[in-house]
Image (cartoon, rainbow, N blue to C red; front, side):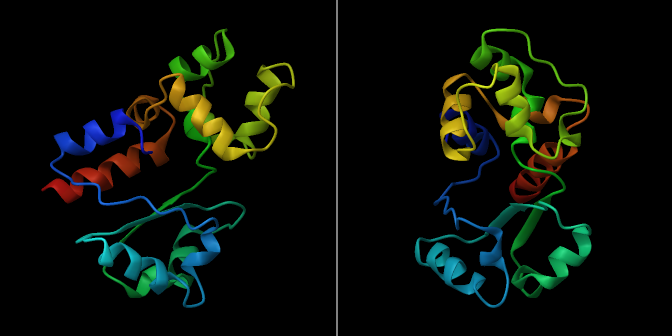
Length: 169
């Protein structure tokens, strides 16, 4: 998300990106752990914080949020109902560039393990299960959240963009 395209999109929405902090696990949003990350962002000058993670194998979005520390704050919580890597499947242009062949997924959010789908399309080679490595490769091949959000069946990316736009009003 730290690509030039993402920063440009934020700029058009009149949003200043202070920092992106990866917690390493969505568990950091539970059991009183969130405050550490929140304080770090506030210390860097953040006025609004968007906490973003995926649902993983949890069944209920509302229950997950209400059990998190975010339910007790004024921060914006965005929980993608699928693995975030499904956005890579939704950006057909970047994925096709990465794989050097057409790669189109009609329903990108239906896959439990999007990385496995990408590796399968690449004849089992290339990415292992390294999310950061795949993210860098996708960014180098033109991935953008905006492209993912344009996919007719990628509601989580659309929701993320909607939340960003709500900050610019």
